[in-house]
Image 1 (cartoon, rainbow, N blue to C red):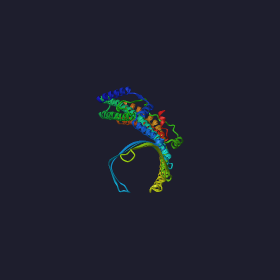
Image 2: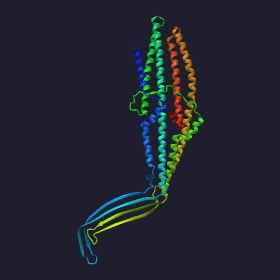
Image 3: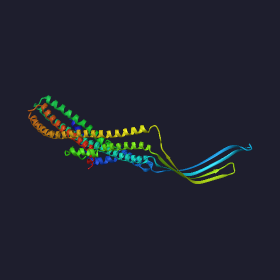
Image 4: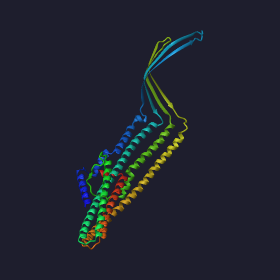
Length: 439
């Protein structure tokens, strides 16, 4: 009886704790998680980096402007011999000085379309970053939604185990009272006690699974207190039975994020090929500068000299041979082919996954319908068995079997509902509609 008291107190404490916790809907959980989840915040920062990189300057469209200033001093001993007379002149400790200040501009005007290709690559990487963020968000929504309904499943299972324990408790009470008046044998009483203890153990162990699911949700929500109490408003697993195959298949081809990412990879591979081909063209560089140079001489007829002026130049070049161009072009073309094959393989894999989840989804819907009928029959069977048991017309082992049949029916329909929900979530994610859970 002490066990009963402890379990009752635990249930009361759990109920009070949940009552104090914030009640959240699935939409509220998703919104909070999308804002706070650490992984999503990291992927958002990486997306911002790709946006920051997609600039004209990073691609090479803009010139570079440098400011430079310098000072040079030379201390020399100079010996000069005249050609005509052979006279030797020596100057020791001659100190020549040079000071220069200037602005220099360098601009690549044309480099075989490499600059424009690089800019296209940066913009494509920016779009790829957006797609990576979308994939991370969709994965998060799927993970949190699955865990949300797993939490519901574990709570329903906890409730079922509590119900089983109450049934066993009632049977134990009946067996104990009947044993005291000599109606039931001591074996029936002992068996009822064993079954009650077994159901109590299952109930207590189920608390661990509920706690583990709650901690997982708190982790996804980036809550500091992972052990904090969590209460959700949903108590049933509601399955969407209105999904249509044709719509799912069409939306998968058009909106699947992984396929879009493969498309970005394909485009980048083609741009890599264009980058290599750009080396077949000449390049044109423009250089210009404006500066001042001051020279001070330690010897000679001039004491100093200052120069202020503008300089400019154009350089035209062409790489005739570098030993690697043909190899790199062949490899780049292979890269384009591999990107296309990868995209086709991914599309085929997604169609296979879609078909598998669709088949499981339809089968589980039928299982739910079948198990609903079984549950009704199991409840009626248990009520009849209880009436016979109270009359002493049914052995305890058969009463236990009727109880087990009822619990098994409840477990099967719960499992079918959760499995159907997982298939539904997977179908929505593959078809690019996982955001429906935010509505």
